[in-house]
Amino acid sequence: MAQGIFGGLKVIDCASFIAAPSSATALSDFGADVIKIEPPGAGDPVRNLPNLPGYPISPHNYAWMLEGRNKKSLALDLAKPEGQAVLRKLVTEADVFITNFPPPVRKKLGVTWKDLQPLNNRLIYASFTGYGETGAEADKPGFDSNAWWARSGLMDLVREHADTVPARSMPGMGDHPCAMSLFSGIVTALYQREKTGKGTQVNSNLMANGIWSNGIYAQAALCGATFQARPPRHQALNAVTNHYQCKDGRWIILSLLNEEKQFPVFCKVVGREELLTDPRFETKIARHRHSHELIAILDKIFATKPLSEWRTLLDSGEGLIFGVVGIAADIPDDPQMREVEAVVPFENDTMLTINTPIWIEGAAKVRPRMAPNVGEHSDEILSAAGYSDTDIARMRASGVVA
Image (cartoon, rainbow, N blue to C red):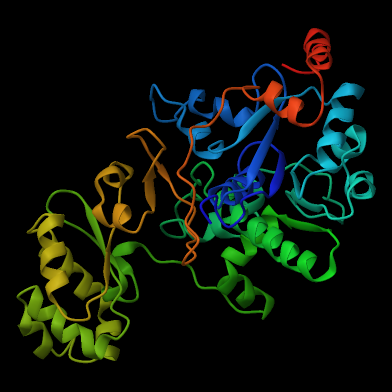
């Protein structure tokens, strides 16, 4: 499997921004041949993300490096009938077609499932929308910040406490998990095709993925549960599942769910074994009743050492579960992320990129290739599809291809 488990699989990425195109990226990591359809000129709008206010400043187009890797770019004007004809010709030999165009746009361009299925009985048509394929909001566009993060209740629930404003999401925060949902749907459909010989339509959407991500609280709401206001950090209901600031300003979070076993180990590691005989903290029930007091004590303890020292000390305690509240600047030098190949280098380059979070024993992924320029592979793709040099020159002259 030198070419990857999906070597030879032909995928058309006729989508924009992040969620749907990232599912194509996941397929490409396992060897699929992905053709990225982009409008001539600026190309996929995701290319412009780093230029927006507030984004990290870099000489590299980091958004496009991630979302466009491994793909071949065909700059095709789908507003023109000849551009639509080119796309339909490519579809006849494709295995997977991915789109997140709003339904009215699909109808206008002739790229709905009903339009394309008759061209290729084995086609897997992967549709991604903001709010689903049916209902009053089916045609409504959405981004992960509103359809996934805000609509699902997550934006409201993760605020620091009830009196603070709702928390903003990070760019692509919901899109990448959604991409893995669409990827899993595509792979399931390919498995079905192996059994039936026929393609099918796959769909997923931001809103459904949002409530799946917020599943426990969403299910509570479906059960008619009464929700409790989230208290401020210093008034958390359990001190040993709380987060604390270290001497250097960094934060650490404890996850000591097996308190009866872990709390004695924790007290020994932090050098405060006298807490074990303090009537306020002797039992789990007592600790929860006096959580505010224990938080105040732990605040003072963690403020005595930097994060690096606390990591070493807590790692020495058998069975203690904790986590570093990471910052983005940690990622390039995180040895564990490199060891498990969560980040990997581009082919023939020292620059790192983020791997898709799936590994299959015996099926190596391809080395990531740098994302293409707009229309970089237009001639190559059209030639492979049977168009002559004269045809390609004519389409370039008319602006159908760039």
